[in-house]
Amino acid sequence: MVRYAKEHKQRTRQRIITTAGRRLKRNGIDGSGVATLMKDVGLTNGTFYAYFASKDELVATAVADQMRTQHENIVAQAAPGRAGLEQMIRWYFSTEQRDSIEDGCPNAALLDEIGRSTDSTRQAYTDGALVLIDGFAARLAPHDPPSARLKSLSLLGMMAGTLQLSRALTDRKLADELLEQGIRNALALVDAEQHT
Image 1 (cartoon, rainbow, N blue to C red):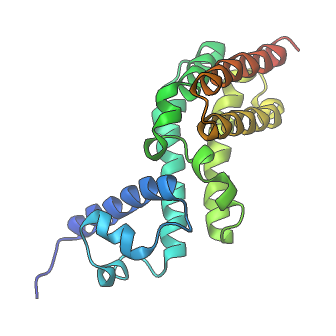
Image 2 (image 1 turned 90 degrees about the vertical axis):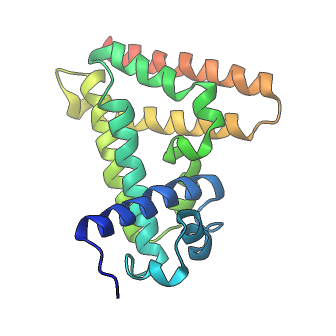
């Protein structure tokens, strides 16, 4: 029997989580079975249980990983203040973000299913969303981020909903116009908060 180093097992586990996150965003939680998820990674179904107790555990872990990645790639790298918020908003409402579901926002791709998921998946999402929201709030009202938290939550909801709707429209011109309007709406919310 071949024994793998602990690092190999950790790398394989992370590969499963990352690959599952992309598949879940593309096909949904209900549309992604363990067999498909493991095939994506090039491993067998039986191997799955060496890493996770259940699909629910993998889903919760993948959602947490997707939220952490979104924070690292967008919020953590954005400039401070309004400039950073505008940077995040423009990135979020880009056609590339809209058209690349599996590489894009987990909010827009999975929010409806997360609401019907297990408590652990919903908690993983909530924890990740709060980190994003706090990143928005720190830029929205640097003098008092706690007061900006609810507006930041509203901003995240508006952004995710607009992106979902843009992805659903078959009229590409209308979908592009919706993204542009989303930018204007989000910046108006930001500017209204910063002038209060």
